[in-house]
Image (cartoon, rainbow, N blue to C red; front, top):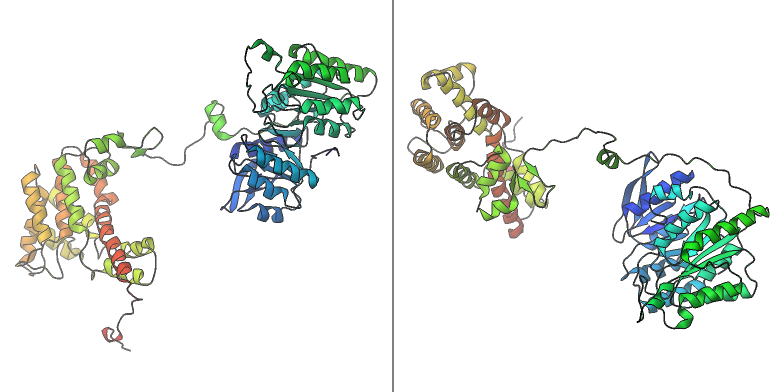
Length: 608
């Protein structure tokens, strides 16, 4: 593997299995380092395509999303690093697919617990094809001032404190990602910082070893010294011992193997990583530290002395003139996310939407302050839910029962009315449910189903002004306005609409007052004297009775009642009800497999 540098300021990666935070951290690191191009070229989300919006400094950018590794590799031939955030179940297969792409040179596997047999296959393939695997069970790696993998080095604050925004002179390799973050900080305190750092991962069979990377660091001119943090378990450190003994490494190596406390336990101890388990004396931290020391590495007496050993080695190189002090640069300020700034109280931002009827932020949604569980447990019906979401209060049961009756009575009026006809024609044209429903709903207006609000508005105005039925009707006639809620194409004075009778009977039984309905009946009596088809229709009945519901319940002010009528609440009731029937007609036509409708020509008057 030896070779040299893995990453540069132009390195780009493909990110497998979209995770917003690690990608954004990579992009923030790019901005901090002054990169001109984002280090993430593309995202791979199996089965998905499109773009993901992220920030590159102050600028919002769109990163392409691809559905397969092959497609992403073809679209971004210069991206040679594959960062795999797949779970341990699929990490091996996706990593192998990436290794087989000619453009991919380095694969980082974040998941831990990848089956050892699969990992061995990945290692064998990578070595035979001159490719590099970092991981499994790794946080990744970083080249200071150039490129980092995922969550390597942690937060931006830690990156700045560790001076990782510009290159130093130290090559660092460890098994532990968490301890890498700690050591980056430690090294920055006593040296000019990291040039490159790698966490090989804590599984038993890492894709690349400590010695692989130390030998690589030995070939990088900018790396003047190497720091190694090993751990008990396994024999990886002994390959480094052999390299030192054979003179393959000519740069100072400061090393420490963690886990010396294991001897204090009476039985064998499994530490955090799968590989951190001593299987014998040679795998103990003490034996490894001794072997490294005898091979020529600088090994302190304890972890506490590790920092001092690094400092002394660096200072010696500096005194010998082998290290030129790095010129410090001030990193740019990373723009703070709006949500973070708001939470910290640094900024305030106006909201874009106001909602007073529902809230989904808690453990369960609430309708007008009533939790969903209460709605179900207390046996609320559709009328109760409408009262909460439309009127923002729990109306008495007779009110919500009336609302439900209106919905049932207005749900459908046969296939011949304009709304149903439109829906049927659209459904037979092969359109989907929503298109068929909307085509029917679009016919609702002043001539079809839209008279409820107008009926309520005119009846209320006339009654409140004290007009008699005669005065009201004649005044409307003078203005050239038909009385909304009066008149029917089929029903007559001697053949009343059964729906109107049902509504009136319910209201007279349950409503505390039906003054508006009685006024509508007086108007009907007068209009019937003029023509037998000028009966009170269902629109007029619902409009007048809803006025009685609002006024008689004692739960609405006069201003609120006027606003409800003006906004169009009552037509909303017809729209909601008729949607049930229109959906039914759509399903009926689909079920019957009806062909495209064509209106018969004999039903058309062709004229000049």
